[in-house]
Length: 120
Image (cartoon, helix red, strand yellow):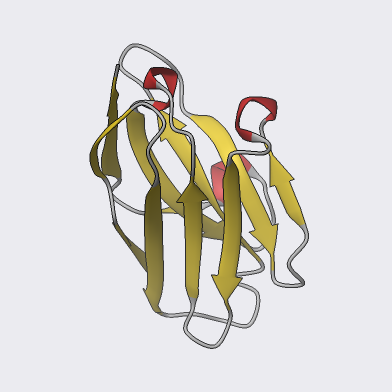
């Protein structure tokens, strides 16, 4: 079982930046971290994809964060990061780190989440 622990959330004002980090540990097989990514869930809404990155560093972003957020990873440290710039109130959510052999939602491992709150 892969354990994921997020850090870096907090309360910021509109336009400010935050950097989220996530470290993976536990029973990590060669394919366990093929895909790493970030999802978020706002109150009363479904969890949604924010960004993903493959081991080869191919990335995918939801449209609303393109140009503002940047995902990266350090394969040697089993870590994934999310640099969030120009934050907006609509970015407020619990952000979850995820990993898996592929992007299949039902097979992802999940962290416990970190709260990001953007005040207007």
